[in-house]
Image (tube, rainbow, N blue to C red):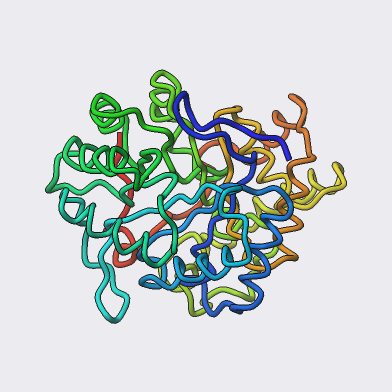
Length: 332
C-alpha cells in the first residue's frame, strides 16, 4: 500500500487508516472476534494508522487494540489516541478536561490499557473552553520529552487554535470530519493546515455510513447514535440524503466500483496531505474500503461527483441538540 506523510513533522503512514470507535461504542453491538480479526486483517493489508480514543467504550477500545496487537506488529503501526472527553457511568457526555495534569493522567491510563511504551500521536478530542490550548500542547510536549508520546495531533479545532498550538510545538495532523457531504474544513481550516504543514486525518468519510451505499430508509430509527441522535439519518433529511446516494450509485456503477469506494476515493483525491480513516467493523467492509486505494478518480470523475453532490447538498446537521454536540468542533 502507498503511504502519505502526516504534515511536515508527522510519521509516514499508509494511505488509508482504520478508525476503531465503532468496535466499542455508538454504532450498536459489535462482534469482538470479528473486530479483532478486522484489525489484524487491516495490518496484514498494510494499514498502519490505527485510531482510538480512551473514551471509546470507556477504555474498552484501547483494551481491544491491546489484544489485537498481542499477536505482534506493534512496531509496524502508528497508534493515534484521543483523550479529554469525559463520560459518566451511563455513557453520557459530561464535558472536556485537557488541563496539563489531566493530560498526563489520561496518557498514563492509555499506555497501561494499550500495553505500549509510547503513543504515536496523542490529541485532545475537542477544544477545552476552560484551558488555553498552549497549556494542553505544552503538557503533551513534556510527554514527548519523556518518551511517552511521539507526535502531537489535534481534533476538530479551527484555524486560530491551530496557529496557537503550532506555535508551541509542531502539530503533526488535524483529525476532522471530511466527506462529500461534510465539507466545513474547506472554509479556511484546510488552507491553514497547508500553510502550517499540518496533515489531515479525515474521519467520517462515509458520513457514519450514510453515504456508504449500505444505508436504507428501513434502517431509520435504529437504536444507535445515528438513528437516535443524528438529524441526517431522520425523516425527510434521510430521504433527501439517500437521494444523493443514488446519484453517487449511478456514477459508481459506471466506474464499476461501489458507492463507498467512490466516497473514500473522493476524500483521498482532495490532497496528498489527507489520510482517510475508515470505520470498518468487519472484514467484508474492510475489503471494500481497501479496494478504494486502487481507484484513481480523473478530473472528469471529480467534476461529475461535484455536480451530483455539490457543497451544502446534505440535509440536516451532523449532531442533534442533545447528542455529542457538546463535543462538536470549534468553528472558524
